[in-house]
Image (tube, rainbow, N blue to C red; front, side):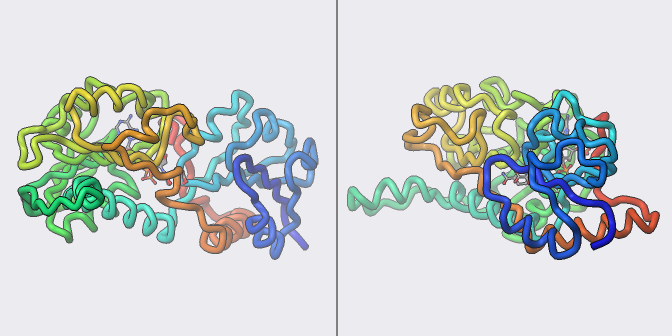
Length: 313
Ligand code: NDP
Ligand code: OXD
């Protein structure tokens, strides 16, 4: 096999399928065997052990196994080489499904009906139509914009908030700290698809949740977070639910993962928990574009989906 070798460095799941698929084209070294190997030019990583990348003398590109790259930036010895993140239709499709599922379940009061059924309660609560409800998407990038498109097709009003101005037809867009409060005040259902950076850490707190619109047909707001757990303060979400600032929450991500058995979120009647499963990274779809980028890079082509180091995502 020709071309630079790959270090595959993964924590938290079994990388066997990634190994098999990457190995069809290049020699793959599994962490920790690659330490200081000068033939390794690429690293494919999920939560790489700190220092493992800095030890590679000829590392040229780091490929993130996910769309998020906070798991790479948390390495204090991160070498200064380009980081390529996942931008892929397959992953976007998964996230769009998750967001539409959770928005519709809150909107059509799934938690209420699931609590009524065991008690044999035959009661239809008032049900607004989708066009009476505004979904605010915090983080209006690849995943946020795809979710917006699908939710608009269902009929919801949509707002999006990002770091920079990025308009989208039919959507109210806001950006920067000045745009945050007006964005929150009009949102009935808040969907978070932000990356975790120093600027966004802890952004979903009691104060932010208190700014959502409660003057709607539900008499309350809803939170859906599929971005990163450290964007939120778990204890503030519980307090906001118990104080009536928000009615219900769907959480795919948590401050500590796996969610500790002692967390009150597990048994809270107004919380729907999934185990960081909103949009899985499927190697059958993600390995071919990674290998194609390695080939293209060796031909001298420009890399795609490179992370902005200064912005941190
Ligand atoms: P993008 O980089 O395409 O979009 C990020 C969005 O967040 C952009 O709109 C960006 O603004 C905005 N943003 C970043 N920093 C700030 C800030 N300080 N203030 C305001 N807005 C900000 O990322 P993706 O859409 O591809 O992915 C988003 C995140 O989703 C990932 O980083 C990851 O954490 C999470 N994720 C979770 C998964 C799961 O299974 N739970 C699966 C996949 C991803 P701008 O448009 O101006 O750049
Ligand atoms: C991702 C993730 O960032 O799965 O892609 O969390």
